[in-house]
Length: 476
Image (cartoon, rainbow, N blue to C red):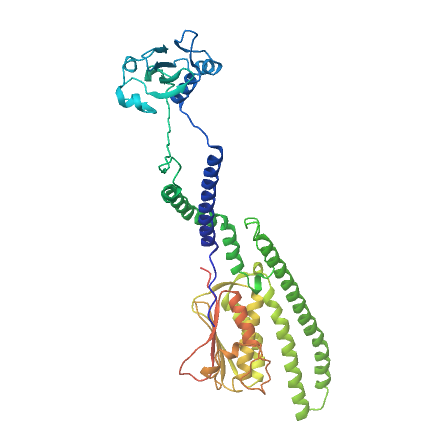
């Protein structure tokens, strides 16, 4: 089955943001063009505005002389630009002037400027003479040439002036109408040239910033994922934090926490049921044992006692499974020799009664471990009981310790086949179906070892019998 490839939210956001920005920019440009087309504005810089104000004021007096009337518009313009000057000439050489006009503008400009509709006159950056605007305009006094500027020298600026001028000239037909068939491709190219760099810059910025923003926004979620990965059966009551989780993900985390809580409650109910059942079984088993011991010594009564012992052992193993839920703060540092020697002493009568010799080999150097004593005792008890059950009923059962924190339980029985050495650790798995064991002992021992960050395995060698080694971390 092909694995479904998940999509990256980070790159989905990057692609969609770039497309959104490009579309937004395009719509903005279209709207601006449409607004300009509808409004058809006339944008004038200061010098052009000065010429426009003077043009409306040009007239002739009753004697036919050229004059500039002081209109409200011109008066208001003088207030805004006190250094404004202008020079008006008609075709007869008559002129009207006002303000401090630089000498260069009092001279004639020849046939080119005389025949031009309008022009801007400027000088080099080092030249202090100001720019001016010249226009051949139709006025009430006829066609006149108007030259005007808002300052007489560049020293009269306010410190910084920025003039932006844009002229759009559309191709025209011989009759003067606009030729859009020729203009539209060029206009589209101009818009593309203006739009493409902005889109590239915005896209590159989005490509760089969005992953960082997403990672920063999801930092709390990443930590929550790490904590979720650490949840196991021993930390089932753990709740994932939602404080640093993005608001959109918080409902999922809340739902996950609620699911954990329900699972923990169900697991606890299941454990309580097993514990209660095991406790309830112990009473009738004890009664059965007492009554069986009162029977005459016959083969059937001996078999009955063995079956009762098997039931009692199964009930005890069910109770032992509840030890796995003991909190880690109940651990203490102990000498491994002392703990194992106590277990060996407890099982010595049982091993001898079953036909074995029991040997204990302490470590030459002390091995101290931090453990839950009751759990490790039960794990070791299950290993020894397993050896008694499957060791063949003869030979020596040896419990050995080494300074690396290892505990080995050895017997001289038939051993465990290589292909079964993992299966025997599964719950309720038995090598011999008719065995008196319930198949829980090795499984319980492995779980206890794992709770202590230890290991348990079946050793391989040329010796006779089985050797099971449980190794616990040694406290330095």
